[in-house]
Image (tube, rainbow, N blue to C red; front, top):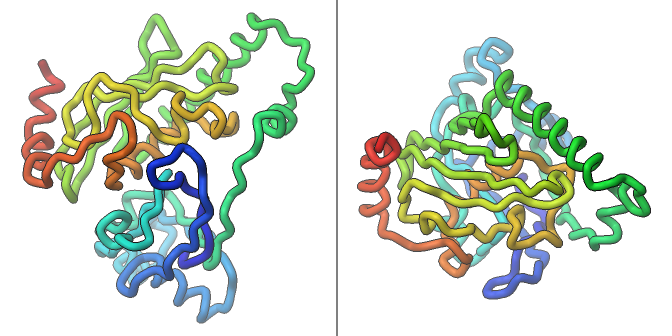
Length: 273
């Protein structure tokens, strides 16, 4: 998005707050998309990023490295360049881009509203039936992820327990260039009605190893969880959150860029132990 509002966690608090997004900076992919909206004109568009579906000129433009804004569970408008921008190539990173020129903040649903939206209020299902649904849902997600892998993310459930989902995040550039980070999604038996526990095994300088990670889509914040979210949305969100600086979040840390690059170079060997 180019500008608008966003809901994010308030600094030093578990409550949420609505922020006004700064207009995207020039030489960013968001600013480029904004210019497209101005020239068409339109308020939003969806653009598939398969190289064989684009003209050579467009593919070349979107394959170049541009500033790209990432906004996760925190938003820091005063340090936006340092906290939320990094260089990225849209082609190869995403299958498609949905661009909304001016976005509106999401409202956090109350628990009773979530239950109503999910169709579970007053449900007579027994726990065993709910567990069967959760297992079917997980199988469908794993099958879809095998057919359509997420860029820079590998997923593998444990053979004896579908609710233990191992993942590997990889990065080609930035502070984690060359890094391979092994982690675990520990999904509850109530999934998808309850969020997963997130942790990392591989040192990154961004997260404590073996510790629960506090994000809006983890078991630290069940009140923010949306049952429509799944493994893919959680891991894409975690991938984005890893590139933000949130030292106050539980499970986070603030190693220097030099240390992070060193840990990235050592990560493959660490995972092979």
